[in-house]
Image 1 (cartoon, helix red, strand yellow):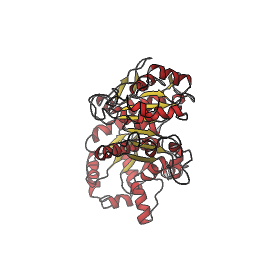
Image 2: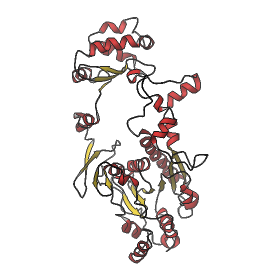
Image 3: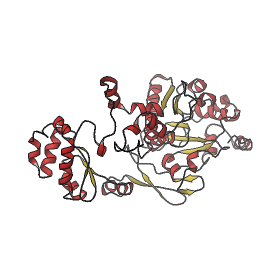
Image 4: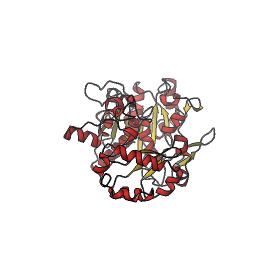
Length: 412
């Protein structure tokens, strides 16, 4: 069966897998993805109603994220994998085989997006670029998420989040000044790059629907890590100022905007507008500080940061974090300093219904909801490997006998 034969049997719509009532209902995304950054990006889109068809190689165990421990719901079904792949479908397909390429082209003919998060030199080799697929679908957007991009001296380099944090300067900004370089506690570059890729492919879809012409969209871990330097980069590039680590996780140019001690822990204050310092002074019973010469302006307080830190510590240690939060609530920008358990168990998280139960054969899986509120949240767990192969191939024209033959040849 070739691509031309398949096109004659394609369904008129993008299948029936989209979640009705959500903004991306009817958008079909074919994703050659694994591990973290890429699946996180397409999960954003699946949560918003897109039909995300995840392609996994039947001959290498599929998405490596299935095996990332230490916690599992069952074989090939890790907590890690569920965190990045809910509301998707899975088909098995070996793109290195000619028959696998035929299936890919048949899928691409029905899709809005073909997405991958492979090493930069692999999309062209595996037929995942716009140039390779535009003949079957000129409106197709081909999204590429790689470590260092698909061109340049590092196109064939593998790469991971922590490496990007190290090279883009993050470790020099994190932790206490007298400590060793430290990474962020989360894989923030993976998460940001996935989110950026989701934005990029949606921009491509908007453009393709307006013009009838698709394109390649590229995002890399390194580019996102560098872009996130934002104002820190602008300070260096234009004023020659390269900042480093600040004590108490302080803002480099504003204070009070850092950690302070309470009777039983810590609180983070951020008086990043002038008015908030006056409100803070009132709330802690020190109204005279608002007009004190050494605290009157941003510059005065920055020049006297050590003194202000010591004086705030002394006052704030007279009450617990919870007591101060009740006093500051809605007046002073402040947060308690929680661990992960406290963060997820907080009353505010429950009030806002940020934790949802996803159906699963072994029982419910509890996960954090999409941050985009756009309608009823779909609650399907991440799929078993290849769970939707027969259904999806049937939609693009493969009959039962053809599917059996593909299985016999280990194409699917």
